[in-house]
Structure formats: structure tokens, C-alpha cells
Image (cartoon, rainbow, N blue to C red; front, top):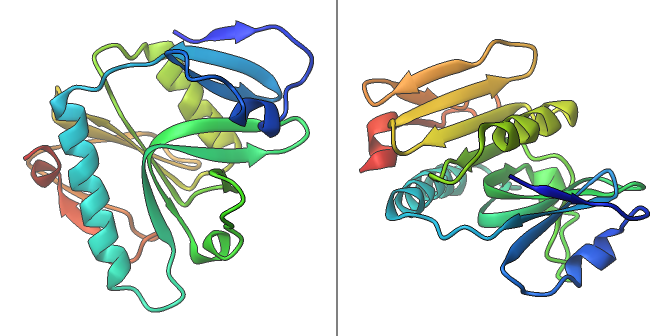
Length: 189
């Protein structure tokens, strides 16, 4: 579970300067929060590699300009003043956001088209629910929560009920990533 560290509004600059001390830090409306670093299981890593690779293969087949795929706690800045920054397992950002990316920061600035969270045994339901609520508040069109232990994916779309798919089904990113489809079983090996 994350801990809220009470203080005046914190900025991205302060967040980026946080020490490597065994915690992941993030900002929700300028409030610094931290969560104990989690060592991910092989199932988590495998799911991240497989879904990231599938997305990258799809991306490479797209016409220019292309979006980009980021994996491994990609820091996304959803809002400024007050700042909101969270780390996400896998994201796809559209070409228009890629064009604003610079080497001056490690942050992805703006709302991704697709956000993917991969569950770990230590994840707390309330924290995952808070993240989904945050993504939906900022109008992320497509959110996938991958559960490598139950071998399922929960799909969240704006203004729709969540949908659960399993290893006998296919995962589609239509209409947001046209043509992207992957059998759920391939995510889990």
C-alpha cells in the first residue's frame, strides 16, 4: 500500500531528485507518495516482455509517424500544477506525444493511448483501483490489467464496463491501436 507524505505541493523536479532508497515515489496532484520497491516475479517479467514485444512488432508495421512503446515503470506525467506522475509497467504513446519527447527528461508528458499494469503478488487491490481511477480521470482510452497468476486480462475502456478475457480468448486494442490483436495465451507463454 502506498503512503502519502504530507507536505506542500511537490513538483516533478523534486520527484526526479528523490534518492534511490528502496521506494518508488510518485505524485498525485502534487502530493508525494511512496511505495516499497517490489521485486517482480518471473511471471511478471515474462508478461511484460511478451506484451511489450507484441506491441513493438505491431508498432513497427504502422505508417510513419509512429507512436512508441515504453516498458519497466515508465514515468508518465498526467498533469502539471499540481503535478501528477506515476510509473506504469507498459505504455503506448501516440505519435503526437512522441514528437514532444526530448532527451531533457525521463518523463512521458501527456496521456498515453494504452496503459498496462501487470499484477505482482504484493499488489494491493486499493492501489490498483486508485491507479485505474487516475487513468480514467485523465481519459486514458484503454487500460489493461494483466494478472499473470490467474492468466487473465481485465480491459477498461472509457464509459464502458470492465471486460475480463482469459487464455482461450484474444486481446484487441481496437479502435485505438488499429489491427493490434494478440491471443491472451501468448502473453503468459
